[in-house]
Length: 381
Image (tube, rainbow, N blue to C red; front, side):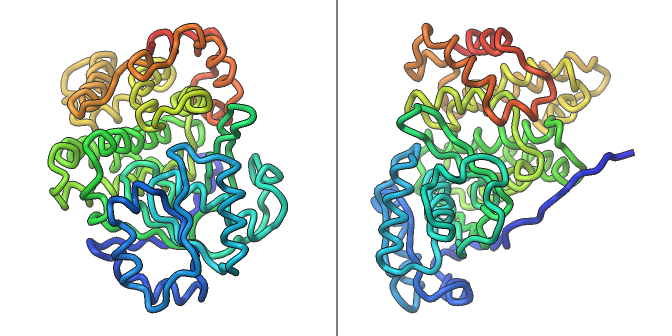
């Protein structure tokens, strides 16, 4: 019999090619003075233009000075800019960094004080100012999750902010916005989404609702990621990846992560490596590590990846599932080792210590020890 679980449905999700240029009514239902948070890559790609063209009144401000791994300092600066113009709602346009930054901004604007006052689990206990999230990558799922991961530059750590009130009110999925995403970034964000779905499916917090979302997302990513990377103009593949990313985000919003994200957070706190790239590097190693504990789950993952399980042992099917994941990343041009992204070998013990206390590790199906994490890091190096 299934034990108790909680499943939150979260954001209102809207999907349509070109929808980002028709947000006026959605915005007017939520506020009168929207403030846009984005980054310079989105601006340079011209992705803000259709959003602005579809508004009946211009936004009260735009903040675009957001790095790939946003920081506490950036959140506070953006919050101050939004406060000065009297913003009453936020529109986040971009990948995980702008969306997570906007989540941090809405914490500060609603509750006051400093962002660090709210770090941790369920510190935020009430509704926040309205927010629309418009992802321009198919990977983070941040448009539907209750998490914000923000780098604390002073501590060289990635901090997690978790509350059901952090889920954006509306997620707008427009595959037209992902057409211009470069192949390398398409691949990294796609593997990010795959890691969300796989870790969610084996998490200690998994449940039938998140399982269904996760497995379907794995199948969609295995089927469409290569096309979305190698033929960016394929709007169908782009749309399928955007939906899969959102589904994986909904799943992990309810069932959380594991050892793969703990290791990625540790490395990402010290080095400016794309989060999805790190997840891609660690994913095969984490799958092998956990498969001894929940082999039945990894057999189902392998099947979702397209592996034929007929007449073979679980061990063989799981090995092929891991190989399918590694091959997908390699086919899409991603690095496979930490040394390839300039992580030095002598820092691995420090990374193992950091990962051991990362919040994601506590939902991993296998209870991790620091020595085991170090071995995983060495295998990935």
